[in-house]
Length: 467
Image (cartoon, rainbow, N blue to C red; front, side, top):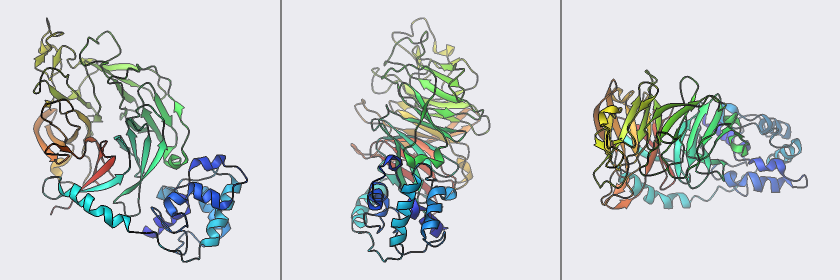
């Protein structure tokens, strides 16, 4: 399997889509340097991907005809996309000639000095994290600037949104499955923090719109085109970033945050959660009184929507608490702007109202901890006690006199009641030094857990070996 993955990568995993618009006069070497050298080295010596010189060619001899076939059709089971028609027949033929001419040469290996130099930094970073006994943390991917929400496809590719970077990434597993290459799918977007998958398409939530990349697993490396989903959403910048999540019944759920720290939003489209069809039709409100949610998850058995909510500011360091909530029926009101954390009446808007009118949070997560992404653990690698319980990424406070949050929490449940709230990953905050800010959590097919960090642009991977 390792050799197959090497071969798939060797033929073209790094080819970029703009080669399709390259001028016919481009030479084979120019095509290679523009599209392949970043992963396979400027001299075909190998870099992130393997050498294109002498090595085991698993998919047949590196003849022109065979290389054209593999480049054109791809290797879908190894996440190599088909490059026809993204590349023209002439371009594929030129690249096949170029690769074939070098396929039997013993090329110098890529310089390896840079990798050992980085190890002490990574080691210092990883040794500063604290996890329960038997768990290990590693860096799965680096270079995903301002990485935010994540979603995992059936093929194992992880799609990642971003904030100020304006990019959407694909994390493509390397052959050893222990780390991934970061491929930029799209850029120049407006805070595209939300990503979800539905019917083979990647949906991305920007501030003012939702876009869709069809057949994404086969197109991610081609800088694919996208369609704009026809739905009207507010585009306020304050709390305007939008996560998005496909539900078990094939709908898309999306929030609209309050465009303020505190204001009356009941008669507006803001501070609510909506759902819609995949094409943007039949937009309907499902929950209100939700100030700023940046994380959705559907319970694996009840299919109820669970979500985090960030509490208001300017009431002091220690109040109100941020929330973990569950929607048990459509139309429920979760308190904003009248009541915060389930127990704190707002000094301005709470007059004449009581907190008992509104849905109480399942968990009060703490003041200003900024809970963002959450995920039910459905894997089999971790002990049984983790199954169907919730991991919550707490991004950490930004305006509290003493920092708080900067952690991944484990919330254990009995039905819809919280049993415990304990730390799962500590160490993103070390004294006053911030080394990371966790944003989202997802489970891979092997049961390991990924955590995105928008502070350093890293994705961490947590595994369990019981030792």
